[in-house]
Length: 66
Image (cartoon, rainbow, N blue to C red; front, side, top):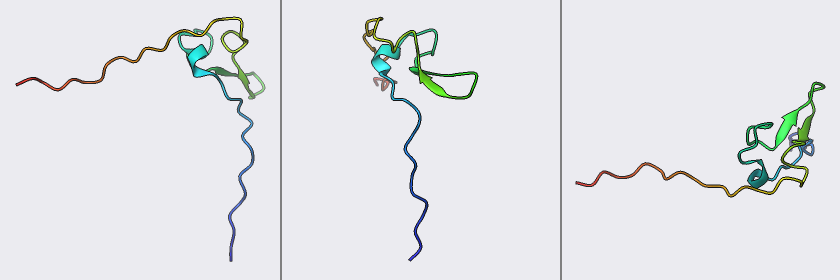
């Protein structure tokens, strides 16, 4: 029986998206890509010094009333 390649662990750090909301440095992603091509947590919003902003979701399309 043939087996596929085993998955390598991800090297991308997990960001807190609630903290990333509204960040101008990472534009809400929570991570940045360095000049060397590495993914790192955003130093501005993921360092724990900036409080998390409340995330608001705009309402979706509304059904037309007839």
